[in-house]
Length: 571
Ligand code: NOJ
Image 1: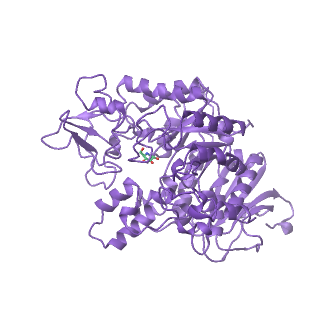
Image 2: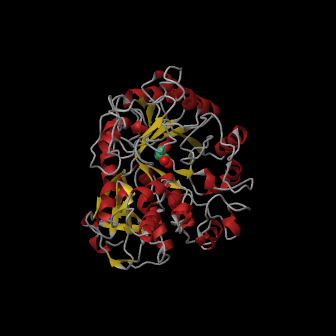
Image 3: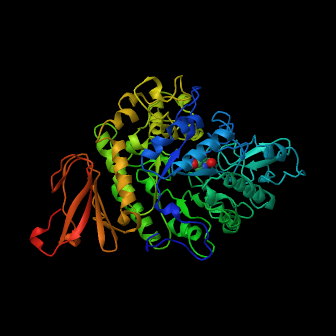
């Protein structure tokens, strides 16, 4: 590891190889169907491992593969130590894992421990009575003055409490009704978590992405939240709760027995709270997903829209780059299974599909941190337009549709769902122009985006300037450039409404990344700091370019050299 900051703190035995890596995220149900039942599976993943490797990534993050009734597509787990029969079994998982390792790809699993499925045997027993070994595995409360135990909203489906007649009590669910929250204050529950971790680590997985991990410790007394907050009104009482570091410290100890790393998902986390997990003697996580840069066109959730603001996006990017510099390591992402497609949000999926898809790659892949690329992002998959709410599969899309703006005309409500639904990230992967986009030989479990004849892996493979090949170029450059891997970040022209420009510097070397978010030509100038510099263009998403004009959504990466002679100054 070079002499740059490697983030290792005292007592940190967990390795830091993840810093120089890039990950590919698989949401398996829609990735590739290897046994032709219309559902993506591990047989399909096995066939596509070489493709994943060819992108230039070094690891795979699997969204949940475990048995699940799929109320929240895998994030409602009914057996933590097995594979969903739709996706295969433990044997094929092991085969995928071994082959991935042979190819030099690490594999991390989703660890969803804030809640289970209501069909998990623990919950089935817990709901039966108030005095069995599982009674205290979940968060049960009596009604308060004939009403719900508190006023919290759930994040996916109505209020956060559901009544259970057998116990005559309510259980807490911060997410869907079929996702009861585990009681992490119960030491037996924490032992279960450790046993799950060991199960997969013993099999050879390389780490975990810990789902909504900053929510697992709830405030004593579960106080009422602010009733005027539209979503997540109870958040102050379950985010970064009183025992969070203690519990995560216990899980960290398990991880320290292995060569693995831990990545936490931190909804609504701030740099300050993230640093409390990522640094110091009590460091419990190596990386954290935050959401701030995903809010440049919305407020708190994609469902509450506002016009896209590049300045907001840049502010979020730079804030995390500056505040984690030398202290902790960033995660870099623009898409995952929880967000609509980025090109339909921050780019232009109609007139400038290729241009904006490639520019978006450049705008984040050269920042400091570990990048994540979500399946389909690398070919510029776009949002899908469905014609009725019944066609959507995602519980949160339905919740938003039926709960909010119900007096608006249906077309307007559907437009909001179109812009915000997680289902846009969950349509089958578009492999080629054949039926069902080459995802399966039979009708897939969910709608294929009708643009698959134009946007698919096969046709992009053949096009040197495709989004797919641009991702490859960016990832290859990242890998061989110490400046990209370890350099310090600095932003220029912060308030510009069209250009995002940043420098990375490392041991006297620099690169400059220039990205236009405009759908028309714009003039640009180098910042003064580069008055004595000469730049070599090393990457660009246009085959030809004009020195002082950026074409729509143009992206350039320059290697910068200092020159004495001002006359020679040019990029
Ligand atoms: C975050 C996951 O990414 C999302 O898909 C899920 O709905 C919630 N956590 C609940 O598990």
